[in-house]
Length: 346
Ligand code: CP
Image (cartoon, rainbow, N blue to C red):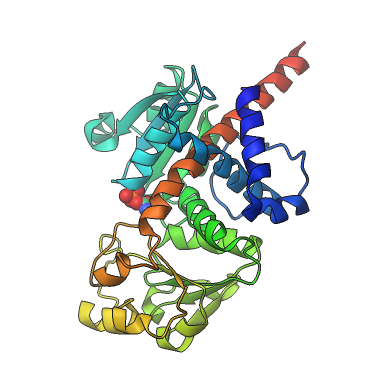
C-alpha cells in the first residue's frame, strides 16, 4: 500500500499541468470521508485531492498488467436500481484494477422484485462481508439513507435528480487536464437541467474550484430554485456560446419527463442543440462535453459529438481513473476510522 501511495504521489508531483495548483494546497492533506454522496459539501482541497489522486491512477491503465493491490481482500458491491453502461462498467473495472472482489447487483433480477426494501437488501449484502457499496437509485435520498443503515462505505453513482458526483469529477478532471487551473473558466451546462444530477454535481464542483457556470435551457427545463444556485442563467444559447470555454451538453431525459416540456424535438434542437452550424459561433478551441448516453441529432449533432472539439470518449477514459481514486480514498478513510475506534476500545 505504501509503495502505491508513493507512486501516486510521485505521479502528481511530476505532472507540470497540475503542479502549480497543487503547490497552493497543503501537501499533507489526509482524506477523511468514508462516503462520497455528492460534491456540494466538498472543499476545494478535497476536490483537488481526488483529482490529483486520479491523475496518479491514470498510469495504471497504461501498464501491460493493469492492476494495483490497493483494495486486495476488499469487496465492492455495484448496487444498481437503474440502468447504466458507463458508470457501472467503469466502477467494476476500477474496483478490479485495484484488486477488489466485485459483486454485481441488479434490482430487476433480485428479491427487490418480491418487495424487499433497500435497507433490507443492503443489510443482507452487508452480512456477507462487503466493504464498499456503489449505488445508483431513482430516489434522491437513497444514498444518504444507506449511509445511515450500514457500516460499509457508500459511493453515489447517481441518485434521482440529486447528484452524480463521479460524473461531475470526471468532467472536471477532463477540463483540468486540458486547461489546468479552472479559475475563471466559463462553462455552459446546456439542456435538461431540471432532471439532471450531472448538472448539480458539475455546478457544485466547478463553483468551488472557481469556474463560472452558466445554465442554458428553456424555462421548462430549468430546476426549481435555480436563482439560489451559484450560476448565471440564459435561455438563449446563441447569445452566450461565443464566450464559453466549455459546452457541457446534457441528455434530454425523456424517461423522467412527464408532460411535454418543449413543442417538438425539432424545435428543441434548433434552439438548444449543438449543431455544426451553431459551433461556428463558438471559440475555436471550445471543449465539447456530453456525459452520455447521447440522443444524437437532438442535444448534439453527430458531426460535433465525434468532431475534434469533443471529449466524450476522453471523459469515459478519465472516469476510470476518477473512480479508482474514489474507491481508494473512501477505503483509506474507513481503514483510518476502524484503526481509531480500535484505539479507543483499548
Ligand atoms: N453518464 C452516465 O451516467 O452514463 P450511464 O447512465 O451509462 O452510467
